[in-house]
Image: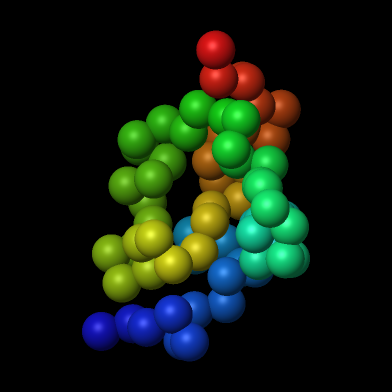
Length: 69
């Protein structure tokens, strides 16, 4: 089982690149908070890393991102 200490929260668990996660940088929010991320994108996250690190905008398909209504 993967634990939080084994996952770098600043790295996308899908591609291994920086995920630009504001939370992992000590901020109170993240770029993804105002975005809709497709279930298909989330399904690409390995089960062992789900809920431990954010995917990046490129993998989320939201680099240009649609804001949530």
